[in-house]
Image (cartoon, rainbow, N blue to C red; front, side, top):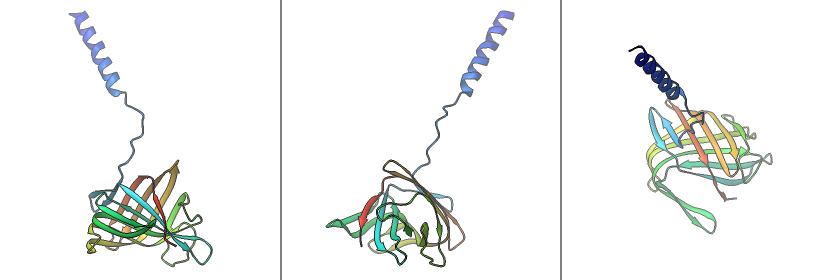
Length: 181
């Protein structure tokens, strides 16, 4: 009986030891937009060059959206945006016209047009982009963090909308570039 109990304890300890071993891989967050306890998927991103701003910097639009939002092109330019889905939109200032600078972008309430600032940000939930129906919220403070891994951007967003609720988002993937200057 003593040997059986001893063997049982050894087996139990081995089971606990193996159960305690976890994979040390970091869990990648989902490409998603979060608002008021709700999660909305993000599947694609656009970077749209608007032209040079007064101080020589590049004015751009960052547009992240769900799969239901469609882009119609004509001659390499955006002809229209249509479909039903979710999106987050920023006008921002970058030092580079065809890419986002890495670093932290902050909300520019005073329109100083400084590099790594953004203004006129919006978030849209269940939006019909042809009729402009849906839940639209203006964002009025926050930050956007930009990192780059090869051709993929890693974008993390933490903002507050007009009703005081947090809007957060994570997107990892490529950005389709359009020069609309």
